[in-house]
Image (cartoon, rainbow, N blue to C red; front, side, top):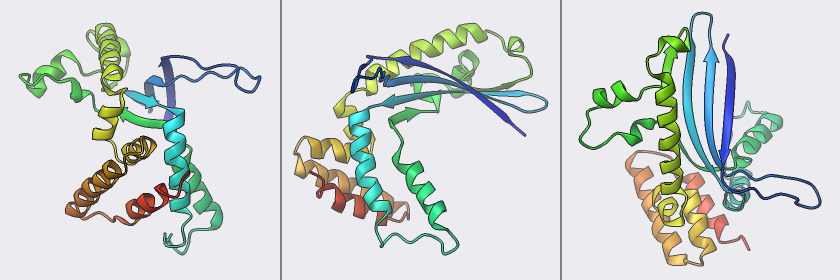
Length: 211
């Protein structure tokens, strides 16, 4: 049985003292996730961009979608199971993330060359000390993280590279034409991949019912 340990480091502004209580909002997350089996450790680095305002907009619309009678769940799913699914899908604060650090591979680099210099993002070991240059690679990962957060933490990038987040952002900007264009882009991509578009269609419909 695996035991999972994660350490999370936050970057970004803090918003505190909400409703008289001290609360901190930390939107940029660098996460070290370690799982342990009987014989080895697995380490995975993850980056998460969070935004309470945007994620709330997405979650509010998605909650209506997932509770719509059109959405059919397996007949053996109890109400409790369905409620758990809805809660799991609509309490996420992440609006974008990175799990595959090959994103940082230079165009002229081969994958082997990149892995030779930086592979700690997804690695297995019995003792961390057995991995050559692990400290150097962890420091490199922080530099990568900073550059990634700088790249993705803007509306234009999110609109280009996300789906529901992009639609909510465009709606927030009163860009109805942009929402329609993005919806068609996502719809066509999903159809080309043979994916079910029912949830997307409902999301598009409910999005314009939001105030």
